[in-house]
Image 1 (cartoon, one colour):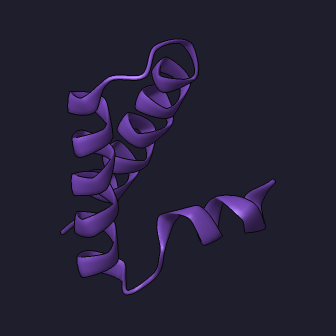
Image 2 (cartoon, rainbow, N blue to C red; image 1 turned 90 degrees about the vertical axis):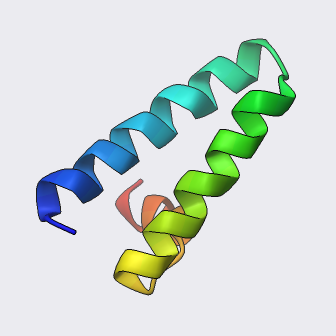
Image 3 (cartoon, rainbow, N blue to C red; image 1 turned 180 degrees about the vertical axis):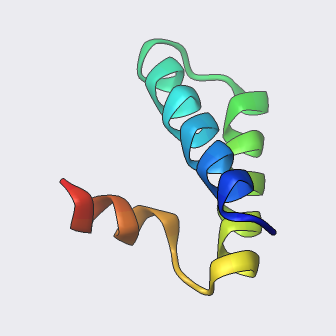
Length: 55
């Protein structure tokens, strides 16, 4: 996976997280889990811990 694809995953993850703050939806939760899984599979790191380092 290219760096640009990983960046797209991160952007999509952030957008869904913002939407989930307003509305809880099972589809959104499943999509988040799928993104987390793909990110871990590609990088070997957990996406939440990477965000904690940034902020």
